Amino acid sequence: MRIGTVRELWRYPVKSMLGEALREAEVDERGVRGDRALALVDRESGRVASAKNPRLWRALLTLSASRGADGRVRIVRADGGELKAEELSAVLGRPVELTGEPPQDATLDRARPEEVLSAGVRARVTVDVSRVGSASPPGTFFDYAPLHLLSTASLARIGALSPRGSVEAVRYRPNLVIEPDPGAPGEGQDPGFVEDGWLGRELAIGARLRVRAVVATPRCAVPTLAHGRLPRDPQALRVPARHHRVEPLPGMGPHPCVGVYAQVLESGPVAEGDEVRLL
Image (cartoon, rainbow, N blue to C red):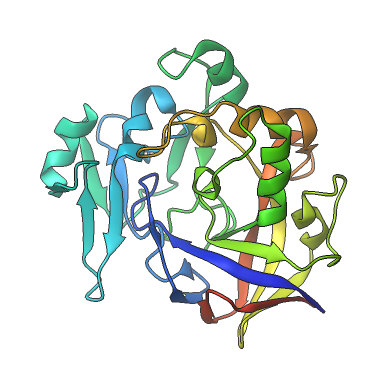
């Protein structure tokens, strides 16, 4: 059954940096080809650098990464100047290594988002240590699973409930932004958050790609942070915290969630305008 259309396609060549919009891409069990292929590792702690801990790593979101046809990843500052890997430690203020190989049992720090909202991005808050890529193939840097799906319906609902009147998709770092067809099935506990109805289901995207939505995406402090020229927006987290709290996995308790993580069942190409069907 057709439920919508792919409206945006995104790739993030370096974890926690700004990514790039694509017209088309190949997707396999490791997600969009080239997505999160690289990350920074803190030489002192051994943990993967992530803006989920804004006090240390929010500056990652001032940098953009893109991947050329030859596979080379280019990192640039907000002013467009290109950075070399050896310059990143000075820019970020901590000793880091750019790598394509996750440390054994890779982990990252996740600041408790409600404490970041109340205390601010520079404050020392409670930090939980999270394992990287629990539902991803070995050797990847994904937070959980290799694809993140987000609907324009969720964005519209958050925007309608926010004093700003809108919210940008890039704050939630999706791979695929899907525009649901009017009246398409998939609505959950709130009429805007249609991804709830995709959980546990298979989706066909384009001619060959098949994925399974496995878990609602719990949101951290990242959507609230400045992204490049976009200013901070605490409402990007406060709205789902008030209006869309669900339990991603048994025993986790309710979390503010936006979008769903998905695993790839059958590899294939994806492009803007591709049809999305619920199987």
